[in-house]
Amino acid sequence: MPKEIIFTIIEKLRWRSAKMRKYALLLAIIILFFSNEMSAQTNRAGLGIILVEPTGLSWKYWWGKKEAVHLALGWSSQKDNNLVVHADYLFSQINLFKEEMSTILLSFGSGGRLKFNRDMHFGIRFPLALDFISKKVPLNIFFEIVPIVNLTPDTSIDLKGAIGFRYLYK
Image (cartoon, rainbow, N blue to C red):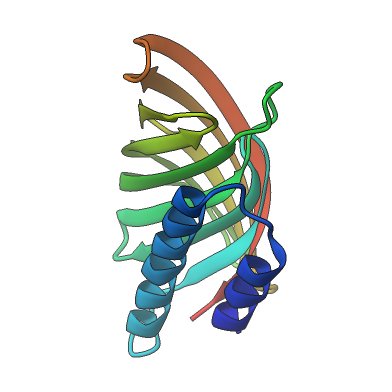
């Protein structure tokens, strides 16, 4: 199911340049690689929508009790509406609340962000996220706040946030 969704979205989006198409294809390949790897495992992943910064697709893959990878592809909510791609490695997940019906996880880690307009901008992300995971319905609702150290074209610090949801699958 996630493979078909990814291919449909890539086909329908109109990319402004060949460079953007290459980065979108690279992200799709990474997602497909992890999706195929997951079919033999019992760990969970989620594919869904991220809103605010960026607004687009969100994919998260959990392995073990303390680690996860989060990828997102979308458009910036700022004035230039740039394409944004980010990838985070969440190396610590703290179980804040665990009950028969749901779990709330606090996670933090680091990652990178690429932002495209006329040139490519690169920044290092330090996400802090809350994930509400329902055990009855395959749904993950999340909130994240992310300090970003922008390294190109100028060095600066941003603070971004996002909310969203993901459909969970094995």
